[in-house]
Image (tube, rainbow, N blue to C red):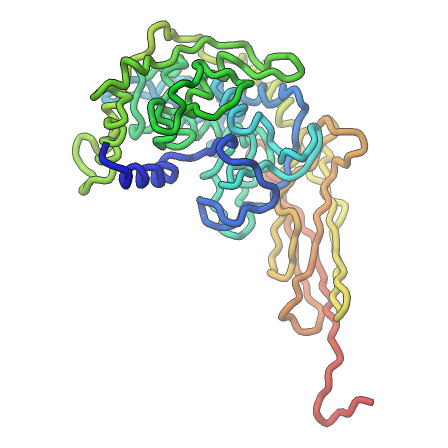
Length: 462
């Protein structure tokens, strides 16, 4: 190994180059805005979301749809990318390729315990989105989808943060991007129907970092393999957590969330020998190729080619995920519904005096089915809004007794620097619909800023 300095450099850059999702287990959740996010540098967004039932059945169904590319078929922003198959020198698109659904189940559990909202938000209610300290959002702890530029989240950012279906779809996209990238080595023949072939893509999902090397310094050499999903997570490589979780699923109320799927792990004793694919020196040699100048030549697109490894004995293909068109349509309707934006407010009047600030409110309702994701955009800087993206629940969405299905956002004036007078602005309420459509309604805002009495020369005040 080339030394501590290089290892630290690789560790730092690996998170930037390879990490598109961050496991919740590596850092505890925080509530509210994070002070700075790795992508964009700004604070995290104020997003509200829905937390489904404790049994997670709707999340599992959504993951099965996404794994089979039946969640958002034909919608480029959230459809599953075409999956490649084959070894590094001969990878081709696989017609109707899918992800083993249990992989998404296990990632969702390892990343967040399969919850979309912050941990203080009860099941079957609406509240703040789950956001990790390094700004991973929701069930799949999606990070790089968000630019955190200090403004309002983009429409896609809002969907990923507010709706569990878009969050799961984004996580599935990220995983396939790792699978398809020549940057990561290939296992076996690169057959996506073999669970063990996803070993390196899973590693990359959490960051192509040495902390996830199975014989690296940050794993416990005495850890029990395979990992059991209900057990302590310290000391394992990330991909070991996911693969172990697949064959030892977690339980909720004494019921396993999915059927166990046998998985074979690499033989570390055989593969981590000097010069072997899991020799740490081979891993660091790949980073040497990445950082060498100029970055050209046969190894330019496949710097970790030497880490390609055979399938473990006993690894066999499983049937591809498939859903009939009617079954998928019924499941998709259950997950996404048909939300309809309804506003109870068209005009807001607020005022500011020397000793009082009057606030306004806008109520957003969903007269349709499913979850309505809304995005709120003001056209003037003196309008402040407490929730910029959130959800309103349709009549079919399970909610705890007494909870409101509508959403109320607070409108606050930021009148500092404005002279006394009447000001007008507009708030646009965007309904971000499941089919990619957008419906926009507007609310007019009037601000009355009253003047503060002051002395003027030549005009005595008595």
